[in-house]
Length: 235
Image (cartoon, rainbow, N blue to C red; front, side):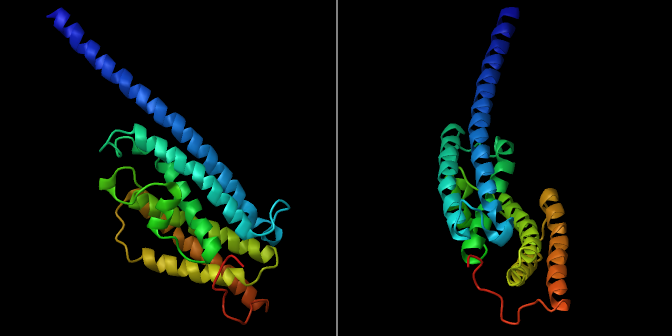
């Protein structure tokens, strides 16, 4: 019996070792993804600088183009994760990349907003990351992670509106205000039961209020442009 017990627990230890090796491999790949994520975020911080420009860029569209090139490395990272995570075990290891993919969903949505002034669809974000949108197809972006990214986008745009005024751009906050208001209306149609997502949604009203205050301040100072808001955020 002791001999049998030893063999049983030896098998358990083998299983644990394999599991630990797999998790370490996942952590290493995710570490590389996080590095590229930081590079994308640093690149997109151009929008908060004076005039929306940095010496190394000629325009915000160029900044978005560079961000898209960096997303190619992110695609490579998720391709590696897809190859090492066992089939049907996505959610078993989901915690390893949950916050990474949420931040990338935000950065993807920000890139698309800056390019077109429109909300990024989950399919567009998935394409940027090189993943699918369907659970049954394997490695995918979870809907809740995508929604969390959109909520992070709202906070970034609130900051963008404030900095745009500081940099003398009085039209941008009008478009941001309309976009975030529509985003808020969309989220209000959802019956959110996920605690993390619900808490993040509760903070959206403060982002809306912050942007509304910027637009109001422009109005009472006589700085609010009379023409309609721009249709594109990339001009």
